Length: 326
Image 1 (cartoon, rainbow, N blue to C red):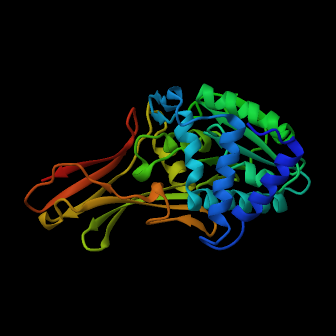
Image 2 (tube, rainbow, N blue to C red):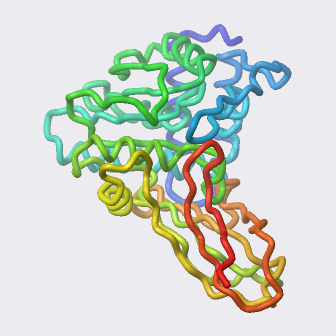
């Protein structure tokens, strides 16, 4: 573990943050900065790829929260980390202009052990400008992050650090400006991103900015090239509000269905695609990162033309369900 002082560590982080937040796509400084950022975080926290307990996921009624090791390893995807950090940075800068003298309050749901998306942004602002509420369900990740905050001496930026399930977390009666959560997988399978956002939107005012701003899951034909077939759903603040409204009085969230015309020439070629608008001009699409990987539709498809009905399913194993009609 490094013996650097908090001041020297923060200086290193500030330099890395400048490179991570720099404009451009895959520029020459990005990969080295992400690599050093990752090495620094793993060194400071002593998380090892050999520790078996780090593989343990937490299974909730609304999806899986990944274990400390895999949560930490997400830092290693350069474009993913870059776009989310830059999106959060820009959102904070925009809110600062609106807030006047009040600091921007960010709720970060699902921090993992490093609060990966927060640290580069923290390095760019004063604690009087930026405050975080940090939520994490995994006890190991929570405790590791608590120690990391002490090591870096950035407690002044942390309004609260809570061990909790963000799906059921009760928002405090105070200003919240931004909610960020990256608790998702390709095609929104397995992890609780949507339920976390629905919980936040159901409690917070309409002025709150949500990151990512939009997640779109589509159907495409994966042959010699990828051909878009149909949009299934775009999850954004407006659609979350619609889901909340139509679920009033129900014991679970009610999601719309989408019907797609199907031809047997598509057998074995239909896939889900995932596109993400992080914030403003920051986005992730096609081959940018693991969140954009194609997912094959596993439903047994007929040898005749039919209608496919798609619907997002909440529960132990969330994701889109495909039903053959006719």
